[in-house]
Length: 103
Length: 303
Image (cartoon, rainbow over all chains, first blue to last red; front, side):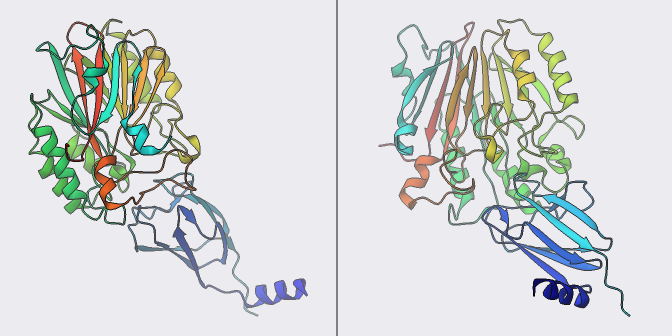
């Protein structure tokens, strides 16, 4: 059953949108998996600013105030670790899988 | 101990240091014995303010401009204008142009001989501080500097750029500090200003500086070292040999005591209590001695 579900998921995978809420000093989905070409959107609902910065600095949202939204498109497969530049104890990961081949 | 009680209590720290937080002036004086800190004409003063967070608007304070103005009014009402004022970071909340403009204008109204600032992480959030150093520093390349005023040799440091856990001073700054301190005799009173605490207040929340021990080792030969930090929006003190650390109140909003909440951040308190948890700090140096009085005064109206 689980296997079937996983297969079904992977078969329908294509570039989609991912959303990560930033709340209570945490990325509410610490790890999110999307396929290559997908756009991930972060929304900060804390009244303290946060940033979304790749550990290798390959992306940086700059300061996000309360209610601010920032998106980044992940073109290449890989595992992207990121953190908040203001509160480095806030950590998250975006796992980008290869786009499903259309047969 | 409840937070209110902590803020009202006073204690001795370090060599000849009087320390206290009061809502009604320099009561630190009454704590000292007669020989300790005579606040006479030979006393020189400077003021520390911190974490004004201009641009913040939340439950913890819906008018941070007003509370910052109260702090400025308090400085301007001191019986003797301080020789300098140091802001220990997070001048604005998001380093937006209008926030920087507001804080710059307000700072210009302080009656003091000189103004200095060290950046907080909110001041370097977009550009590693380029704009901050242009506005408040000594040029974009000078991210740390020292100066002699009010009878102390002060090092104004940056420990908020490129942080990954706690604060970070970095190799270049540490080597600069080593060379700068080497020129000082050990009986010169030293003050260190930096935004993030230079001792392990609460590492889980990043309330520490990763490479602080190297700096502290350079300071141990001095007779009197006063370390002034911001960042944690509350008054705490710790003595380590001849080094005494003081974290400062914010002028904007308090934060939870270390580990008392799941996360740090703006702490909403009953409206009547806010002013008691915000404040300014006066540092008095008895000329020719190592006696330093550090007095925190809240923004609450005097009784």
